[in-house]
Amino acid sequence: MLVDAIRAEGFRLSKNRTALFWSVVFVPIITLVIGTITQFVMKANEAKLLADSDAPPGLKMMMQRGGELDLAQGLVEAAGNLAGPMVLLFVLIGAATLYAGDYRWETWRLISARNSRSNLLLGKLAVVAQLALAAMLFMLVAAVIENFIRASIFDRTIVFGATGEAFGQFAGLFALSWLRILQFTMMGMLAAAVTRSLLAALFVPLVLGVAQFFTPQMLGPMGFTPDAWLSILVNPGAAMDVIKAAVSGGEAAAGLADGEVLKAWVSLGLWTLLPLAGALAWFKRQDLSKE
Image (cartoon, rainbow, N blue to C red; front, side):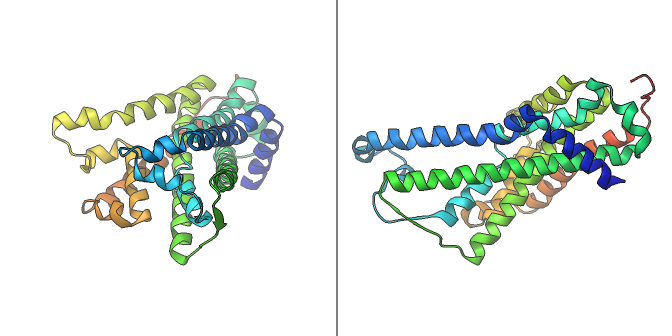
């Protein structure tokens, strides 16, 4: 049963402390350390930065002494950044370990007789989804701590001005970040099934992610605008940014072209479902007798 597969994969991952540390704990710690150092550096150079007429308004607002610091707004901003490059990279470590571990340890033949192949692969996906949620929650905790540190350094009062609109934005951005992390790991699942290699499960998504980052520069000279179908379909990261702007509202949403959100959803959906379908189809017909 699928539930049995999920429980088994979750138990095995819980014993892999190295993968859990790098996938869940490392990035929040580094983010908090860098953020704290940044706050102290800003405070040490406060007079110089405030006197600089070319300093960004957002930077001056962050350094504002006194007043209130809205924790709810800080959480909304943090939710929009939960699928950043560092989170994607390190969650991929745990995901690749799950997707390719049975090839590496030669354990497929020991468990495939006890469950269907679809359930075995979907069980891994369900645990990766939980792993991504754990990493995101740790990032939110780091964001809360960083806001308290900022408030302490700049003598600001923490308030929690939660509104229905802020909650909707937080929920939408949180869910979107979760989907983006899962989408990014899908190519790792397909690569693991096709190549039976842990390194391929790690590097194929990374290479694709880097290549997709440069697609606007490659397609622009060919006459494709950033909101064209091809530009968005080949770049799920850009699709993520479009949907994020629509969820955030305001000027970002107003600047979107007609039909751009639909294109973004199609792109994100295809980059999530097609690799999953490919991995399931390949795994079902794969010979594991010699594993």
